[in-house]
Length: 256
Ligand SMILES: [Zn+2]
Image 1: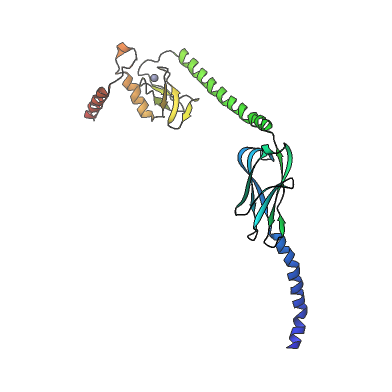
Image 2 (image 1 turned 30 degrees about the horizontal axis):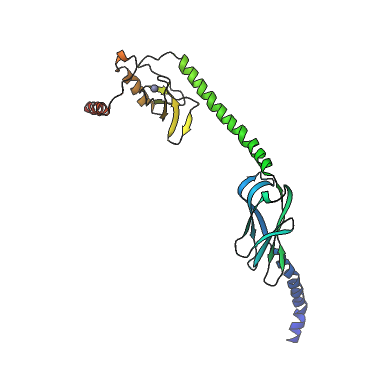
């Protein structure tokens, strides 16, 4: 027995040494991870920030309290999970700042978090930075919309009136029937997509309407239907009353 212990004692010693070495290693694994979260404001992803931000800390379970720091100065603490503190960059001088956090263990030991470098922008710098992205973008969008309106209006003005019943080429955009005059037309390439449909302009009556692409057969039927219209009206469709529509539907169904 004594021999056995003697034989194993170098191994036990080795284990003891390993355990001693591993202990500080475990302590180092117990880290505090600090993250910066934008609540309301500007952040360009490269550390340039302005507005309302939060420091979030993921801490080991035995951390009782987290102290949040900017440039090593405490700006507040949180003693409950999730450890978090909101701050406004406008309360600090613009420029480079270091954000960090310290976790306090029950025995008074402090654990430091990683540090985050952030360039606090003044509200004016933030506005300029935001504007430099958004204003050209909005300008481009509005410019395209105005151009598309202008081209559509010009093409409608120049186009001679299409005789009733003329077969139309609806192109790859497809066609639709104007809800105002009832004549079919090819959808314009530049139209305004809305949630409820597309806002497009009718080349026949020049009125805007919310339309959907329709099957080709429906469009051909609508072309043919134009021939039945009152020629005296020169293509101007009389608005059908609800009663007339109902009667027409009944008449149509009778022939089926
Ligand atoms: Zn129309």
